[in-house]
Length: 402
Image 1 (cartoon, one colour):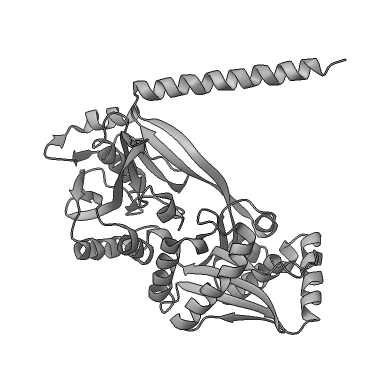
Image 2: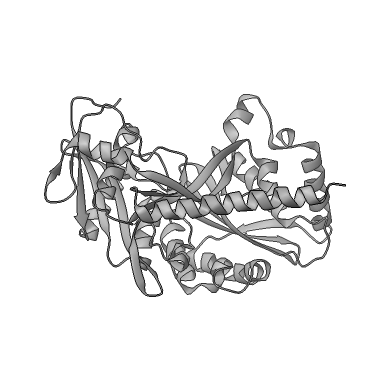
């Protein structure tokens, strides 16, 4: 239940002490919706690896902290000239650093107050902006960062307290632009168990056939087995082993595969060191006899398995061999047997995800800004381009007519 009698106050802090931040972040984690990407495991590792300077937006109700968010401010430049700032939530705005790819990004909030607190924290961030500045959030679920209702709030986003109505009225003027979007997929075990289904009975006939055929072919090479890293040393060994397959499939440039990006590697080496001993990181090496199938890198959090990365051996040249389909089938079955709540494939559209999933969501990276002449001009130019393209398509279609 949300309290309507106590005001919520937002504050803007510059470079707070990290030990103070960690203590309050961990405490608020206990009151928030479970989210690996908003856990101190992810956030603390990200801060240590990439962030020197940041701001924190904080929401309080009475003496209790009910919201926290970390903002990195990046100067946007073209040809060395500044054209505004980018306020990034739990990202740096630098593509090589953001390649670690946070998902389900949001403010960390008391789950009982989230719908009230989120727009207030957004308003606090945007009160620091001017001119062509933007606030970027994502990859996030389709939640309302700028909606508001008749809640009782106060805000202190600087040296002066902002009037509640003025703050939220200003937020209502904010423009939103989606700069990236995709679907996310998950297999929630609950509905299957409620219907007394097994994984096999849930899957389509075609999916079962492909998995069985592939397992039989792999079985001819030897026992199909999964070795899960039991130590940090073994986890790092499996992760580094994944590089060859990942680089081969996605490309050897740093923008193609994270394994070509030193920052990506540094972050995950540190994440594995911190998370694997706690059971929050699971790295699996798959084999069929002496044949190497590859590596699956998953997170375990709040009794869910979250699939983060795969690096698979597609070198056999047999289209009937489906290393990804087999790997996820075996890992989903293992998670089911161990009492997990589900298996989350997260963002990205792929056939194998649709094969297993019974739940779909929308993920997006969005930018919020206040109206500005520069953006009005850009909108007008984009509209002209769309109309010109439409006219060209129509013209080409007409010329094809007999």
